[in-house]
Image (cartoon, rainbow, N blue to C red; front, side, top):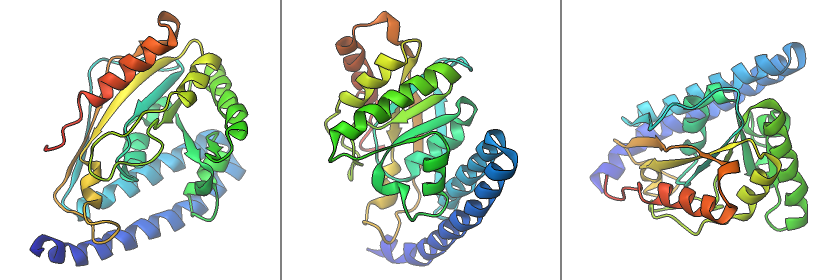
Length: 247
C-alpha cells in the first residue's frame, strides 16, 4: 500500500509526459510524412518510441533487450511476442527500429489517439477487426506481401490481448499462418517479454515502480524450413519457456 501511495505523484508526471509526447510527435509525424516521405516519417516514429519509452525512467524502471543471435537486415521478419502491456510496443519499436517494424493491431487503435493512430494508418501497419475475420484475411495478406517485397518486419502478438499477471494466454495461430503464407522468405523471430505487466500491477493508475522490462530475442526460424504446425509450436515454446513470473 505504501509503494502504491508513493507511486501516485510519479505516475501523474509519467502520464503527463506520455500525453505530451503523443501530441508533439503527432505534429512531427504529419509534417515528416507529408513533406519528406517514408524515411523521415520512420525517423519520427523512432523518436516517438524513444521518448515514450523514456517515461519509464520517471517510474525508476528500465528496459533492455538481449539477442541470442544476430539478425540479418533487409530480410523480411515476423516478430512474434507475448503481450503484457502498452510499453511492449514502444520497447520493441525502439530496440528493433533498424528492422522497420510494422504492427498487426486492433482496429480500435486506428482512431482518435494522437501519434498512434496516425502511425498505424500511414506507416504500413494493418488494423484488424477482431469481430470480422473476413476483414482480417486480406489485411494480413497485404502485410505478408509488404514485408516480402520490402524486407521490413512485422510485430504480432498471438495472444490477442495483454496478460495482466505475466502468465501467457492462449496463442492463436491464424494471423501468423497467413503472414507466413504470403511472406515465404521471412524469418519468424520469437520474443519473450518479461516484467512489462508489472507497470500495470495496480491497474491503470497508479503505475508500478522499480520494474526491469526485458526482451529476449530467440533464434530465428526460417518459414521455408518448417511445416507451419511445427513452426508455430517451436515459436510458442521459445516464448513461453522463457517467461519468468517472479523476476
